[in-house]
Length: 252
Ligand code: ARG
Image (cartoon, rainbow, N blue to C red; front, side, top):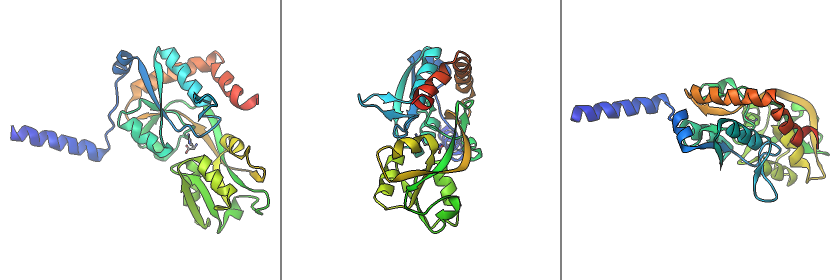
């Protein structure tokens, strides 16, 4: 008995160290009838809470369309962006959709679906800051959302004076409006939304990076990835995906 216990303990430890993901099988999800989707709903136009207190945005509608295709009810789990990967790898959520950029580093810990949108990082700053491009960030204080690609690029750039992390992009841009930081590095479409309510903030027209957005899944959950990719392909083919994106971006 002791031996068995030791063996079990050992196996548990090996899994823990290997960072082995736990997740619900597609059969379990089907049986439950619910697809649990993690997001960070402070990132319009991809995900936000609308005036009626409902989740809305490109990612939310894509998740709902995928759910509909698979015959599953989507349950949104609104959490911090940097908790999404842990959430899918612990099985708390079945997938994450949050304007998340596919990166080589993230691919080590999660699976990604096919990409459904593209983006880029841009700089937001005050119109009179004198910042005209990436080179002008040298020695400056730059605000970012924790765990995002903007955070990663800024933290990797040794010329930047200080990188200040905020839980949401909304908070980073608020800090910028209060002169607590000199600039914010964030995704282009959300940047446009964030500056809408501030007269003195501008977006610098210099492409920082090109990025592709995809849904993330627990490492090894290739069965669900395949199902979701099948749904995505159908939504691409019948124009649903384009209609969702146009509704929030192109046809403003
Ligand atoms: N595209 C960036 C990334 O993957 C930012 C995404 C932030 N998304 C959000 N819902 N807050 O890191």
